Image 1 (cartoon, helix red, strand yellow):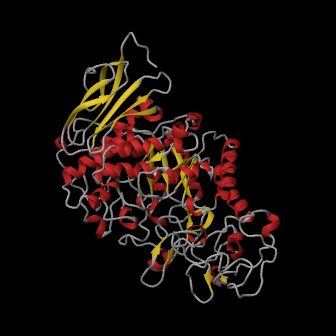
Image 2 (cartoon, rainbow, N blue to C red):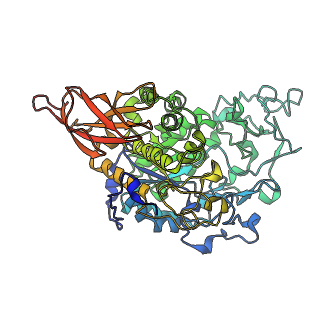
Image 3 (cartoon, one colour):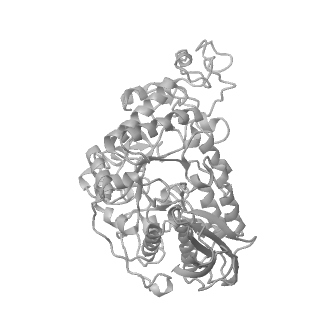
Length: 607
């Protein structure tokens, strides 16, 4: 272990609590805003049952999907292992667990030399069962119940855009074919024979209109291999008419919505049968398992009409099941700090929340790309764009990195080639302070609390928490530790674990930091000071938070609430007094931060 004196939290000792018995009603009563979310892939977290490593299959890795030495195959993590580690997550301060898809997947996909496994959960064949590599439906229910007993919610990661890659096209061509040149009214192109007579197109999702769509072969002639004729569950998913069948998406323009996502079978989500079927599938998971929310994958690749039907149905189902604060947030992958692109999905599509890619882009811009702190101010100014405005933004899941784009530490190394470990540690530490004290519901990506630094995105950002056998994981230098991924990394004494647990405790003890209104105070066009005030949602008491995004110490004035006179240090070192009504001197080391509780003047009431 590196000497902790170099880390700002060297004096803290965090005890890992045992399980608790929290009344389920208390869990259900909590709103989405204010949760601290921990996101993990079950396959990479903990192996609690080695008997299920092969998923009940026989043969080599191309049959079973299991090869713990290969980063693209199953490694053995499962639901029993996750359940056994709930105390670890409770000690970290997680109040909700976002679990990557647990549905039964096609074990292996890809052509010769390009094979990989469905360890990540996004290649679903059976939407009604847990994948045998992860365990059973009963074990998933046991996980949910055990998490609830500790006061933690469980969010399922779900998919409605696509299924596993099963459908094939005659001629083995998969280039996208657009609707203008391959309309629904002709078979195989403009010169083809008339088909689907009377079908008014995909903009009319009525049952009467789609009854006239009888031939799925407008662009390609799809078929299901005999060996996989009934591999998908429910069985209606095996019928090609319920898919777009237009070829592979390039993720631009029309094909972003109607194309096959990396070859995966793209559901015809405009079809009323598909809408009804997906609603039935996911309503059953709510009713049977009592989960607390959905993270929805590939949200922007599905038509808005689907979400306008699906989301209200899920919220209604949850309310009837006694879950009044069911959480739904969509993945609208986007780069950069501008919130406009993701905000429209809360207005047009009806999403209560979306993953806050704008927040991620803003923090990366100021800590990795040398941008001024005005970027953060502009991003938060954009909160008015969300349906529900600034109040709704309090529930937006904020994050630093993930399983697709890579870890934040990896992104900073990419932005700043040659950066030393100590400076990287300080930048990543500051990013986590921002994540856990600024508005939103923060998402901790598993392994970040143990200093994981991946080699890139996708498979390179999905390391094992238990002892790994992947050589390209095990040669990584972790932050804040001399450990490697070759051994298990569940150390509650790790500096980043202690940092996160300290800040999550602050959030629990001071609701202003979890659910309080945020007001931007001071920022500039260069690196340096960024400050905000947050307000207790009940008392209105003000908290002052400041960050230094530069690599040099700062001492400068910041705007502060005019009623403040003195400040109490909650994290970092706060000034004892204001400089004048409405102004305070902020002194911070390079990449430093402070969280302060303000004491108002006795002559000026708290607003």
